[in-house]
Length: 448
Length: 170
Ligand SMILES: C[S@@+](CC[C@H](N)C(=O)[O-])C[C@H]1O[C@@H](n2cnc3c(N)ncnc32)[C@H](O)[C@@H]1O
View 1 (spheres, rainbow over the protein chains, first blue to last red):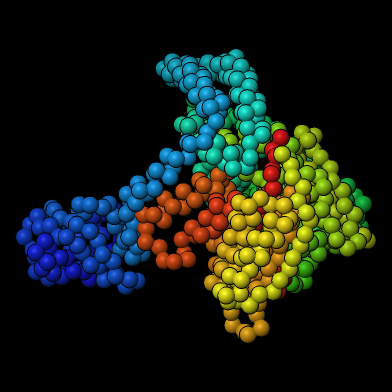
View 2: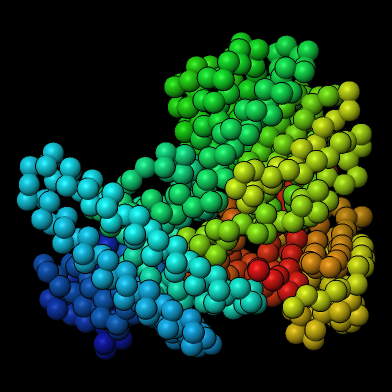
């Protein structure tokens, strides 16, 4: 509840001013303490609010209730924002912009329209079927219902996944030759149309709504690592699980094999003790589980985890709590975009024997990626290695991610990824792939 | 369809004033056309460059006489990169906000969607000039560029726009 009170003049239809003190009465109404009370039900043609940040003029309103509450007649104001921030927030403002959104369906190809219509029809049929079963199951005792749902998922799930896969193939076929402008327009159209189904998947709901402001937050990463059903109903479970099992997600899980393996190699060859490790954009840092359980002596490791999102760092901390602590652990809440500004970062942090960054360079454009890579290279100790992941332009989940998940990456070719490291002094550069072929690993080693 | 663009790079230092920025428009457009961009693209990229210059003048911190804007443009086979650098005060909260905005905006497949979502918030509120973040959304949407930035080792803000040429996704 806002308590701010502001001086105001209310002008009635005869032009007479009624001064008073105004505060928010509710989200959509104001309360006035008049110097002199006007007749009940009075209508005012405008209100001038002397808010400390700036004067504001509000439109037509009427006194209701006990004669001290104001409701508006032509606009719907957010009265809390109004009083607290001195900002006019008219909840109907966006209505005027709707034609812009409506116009987005122009220039959608016939083939694409037909594809979307058929897809919606088929999904509706599947959803009805699954939901009907669930309704029947829900009348049973929980353990009986759960057993029945398990049968349903096992028997009908694979067929439904084949249906989704088939549609992704059709989608790729249709959009393969699109310009980037066409992709954007058709993607927007696609998500408007499929919105109810997107919201039926916990994973897709999150990638689309991006509650942390970006795709790839710690919760999404945990969903990928966990690779489980989510949601109560079978249809929702399947819609959640399908994208989480696609190759690009498989590639994320592969990090948990690849990073520990590379780290292990360098650790075994290194004399360094402690062996200092830095993960840049660490997310939930689930690979630490595999590192610590893979026989590495945690007492030989000093680990620094950096992420811009404090929720990601909290998730990383709980990973550590589960798997056991390294000799020393440092969590840094910062963005690599600003990390670069500190010339003396190496003095403050020391140098690292192994630095890795997974799932971040895919978000950086070339000028920034190059600058960040050069800076991370400076943080390497002699003989140290830097490993950077980046999805390849041929990522088979690319259209799935772009159209369904609204998850956009900066894809690179091998050459483009390698070129980020060009010009680094005394560096040995390699580019390799993971087993799915969608993700590349750039390894940069500093000479001894 | 893949086009081959001529690989070229230019670098310039400009004083932080509107006149100097305005003078760049025509030669830049000609330069982009020379590299092989079509008329629309050359126009859009010249617009992007001048919007970034304008931002640098508007939001840069200009305290000393010898301070300047650096403009670098690189055209290569797959991308056009415009980068503008200007001095800024060390204000972590402001940089954090810019970082969040850029990521939020780039998070959508369709820059139109980012623009509309922003508009949805802005159209209902009376924002002050410069605080809405709509300008950046517009550059991204109209010029079809990916915006990104970092703070350099000497504490300057390096803002860049990348235009991916004929990105064939197949
Ligand atoms: C896709 S996740 C990857 C997480 C983890 N590395 C993994 O592989 O599971 C991306 C993470 O990068 C972080 N991130 C993105 N941009 C960043 C930046 N500029 N600076 C620091 N962290 C960033 C996000 O906060 C998020 O936690």
